[in-house]
Image 1: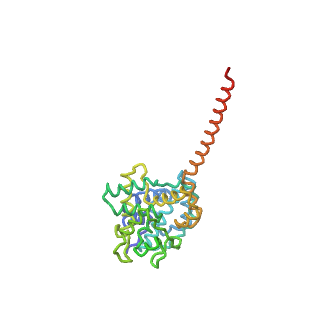
Image 2: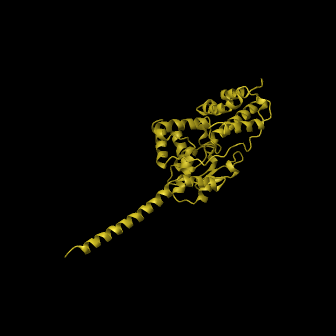
Image 3: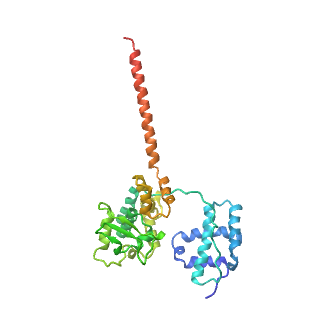
Length: 317
């Protein structure tokens, strides 16, 4: 197989062949990210010379000589890493992949975006009624009610459901170690729509049958189907499917579930991750300001009562 010589050739190869870059907007966004790199080293830069010092030079250039945000610079460097790793796996380059460790620039904490619980049901209803897609409606509700990651949803099998003990096990199989290598158990609540969905999808099926993966050819087919529904049903809140996990986390916190419990259910690696969702919700702020409003109202009522009493006492007999 002919080896690729330049970074641009590697990028074009990735755009033509990598599934995630072919479909949707991913490839376009990555081209935009890599355009910043071309501004620094050009399109004909030999991929064999793309070593660690050159990567650091690119980061320095983008950081000092452009007005790009740190997050955009990090995405540009991440795009290079993706291209090199993909081309290396495909055997179209013969180079030593440089280290990308500690190249990322610090990025300020970003706002966590969530769908509301009401919007979740709007999305599920639209998938069912507007798009006639029962499979997508089931996936939306199960995802939003369990807080799983999308990849975890697609790996669920019948044997992961324990209806006798009302539990759903995520990870912990020999063929499936989820993120953080820690299996978790999510209770199946009787009055949740998830129970009916899991029963329907598991009944009379072998233990090794997938619950959702057979409905979709890939992760990207599921996320694209969801994006179409979101754009139709909630055009002003057209967020990716993964944000339903954010809804799960913030809704638990808004119901005063302790952060340690939310962390365990969501399988967060660090409590700081869970705390991001605590900051994302405005319920505590609203509650505080409502308490303040009540205090002001009580004070105003007391003053009005005093004024009325005083005026009555001062009126001539």
